View (cartoon, rainbow, N blue to C red):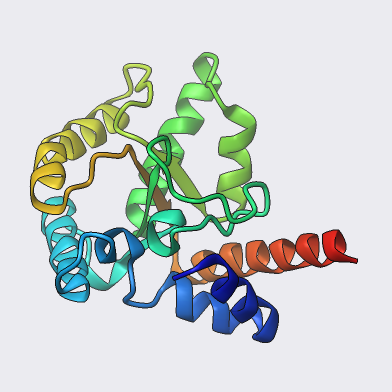
Length: 197
């Protein structure tokens, strides 16, 4: 996947087509760059996460620059995946979303919650974003999540060669996933069009 090819596709197709081709499709640049049967590796990865987290296989998806090589975020404008990039992983689970959002809400009512504005914005977009290195504030839900994902971190590095921080984006439902990404694609297209004109 080259940047010009992706840009041409974005300008030649509607946002839904872009979403299906690049964000929920089976092609994952991160696995392609290592050669081999990347589609099979992606399936193995999703199965691994499914078993480790107890999330249905089809409720797991890689997004972001790990998926396409280039970021579709309007703020990053096709920034290429690099050593400092996060590996964005979508998990669709209403129960997990509700639990982590509830933990953030409880923490914010008792003390300072770092990144409060960003967390609030994410909740309005139907997801919470969490890494295994985030502060747990002594909250049992966040500590439990952190313990769980840390148990398989080394396996992700050995089996799938993922050495980047994983940003778990836990969505309440697939409609929220699609809405969020389609709005981002639309804004990215508008920003680039305005830049050119």
